[in-house]
Image 1 (tube, helix red, strand yellow):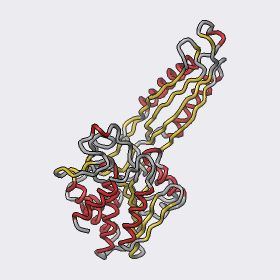
Image 2 (cartoon, rainbow, N blue to C red; image 1 turned 120 degrees about the vertical axis):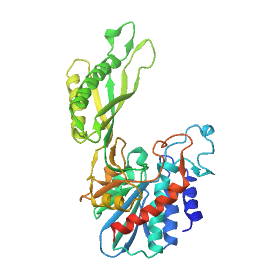
Image 3 (tube, helix red, strand yellow; image 1 turned 90 degrees about the horizontal axis):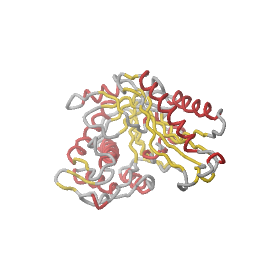
Image 4 (cartoon, rainbow, N blue to C red; image 1 turned 180 degrees about the horizontal axis):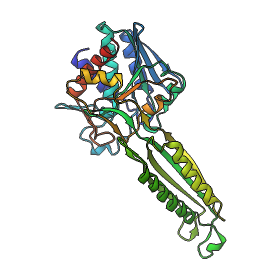
Length: 375
């Protein structure tokens, strides 16, 4: 593809409003793009993810993946350009998803197409996996993993925006809900009721204290410490009634030294202990359960990227979660690196943009990595 064609692909998919779902149009776009260039692809039912493969030889299998969904644009009137117009101003291509993460999605796909078109001398397989629902729970990557699409991988590149860095490890994430059930009564007769807010307050006190102990005790040299935050509380119907039901939601960022299973056990123990008291009826619901990702900082894949890169790239960890957390549940172990184009502090923000030359440069960079890893 020439420069203009590469840019048009990115503009086309940014114009598709795949907000927190509705990715089927993106899937159709890439399926047709691959078809035009003689590459087979498969739409995976239910999740509407897309898997495309190009095989030349019997060597290693390199998976490449980015998600198709984007978050909502918010107040579109605050944007310099309409968020789904993909306007170019100078060297900036504006639009929701330009950084997170359609530029990487396009770059990974175009690099694969150009490897085939140029009949590059590789010995192995490229497997492109465009996933759905990453922003709402890594749904597509979870399904692809369960159905075995990652079982043959030797390496995996997740094209999230990383800036000039290679990510080999990241924290896990738990979203949880606590439901406190009490009994309604008139506030002038509080003993006739059970105050669900008061009971929830007991949970908050215990949870904050015990999770702070975890934070203080366990450290990861790269990822740091566990982070716990209670973020939403709702309870009561009106000011002169004892509240019958209160709900709380919280988020916890986990590390390998005290992983999701141990954190969930702490929360459940607190709930069980409180429920032994008269009048307490608490329930723990785990809404989102993404484990930490650990890979090797000196893996063959990372060494290849470092060898072909024009600059020395730091190898680091991050607190954010990615589809790597789902893919690494596969039956086999493989090299993992998170490496992609984008302005790393722009995801989910107004006036999100991608530097055009960085995007074009990443297409070329991915091609060199594909060739070197599969040589």
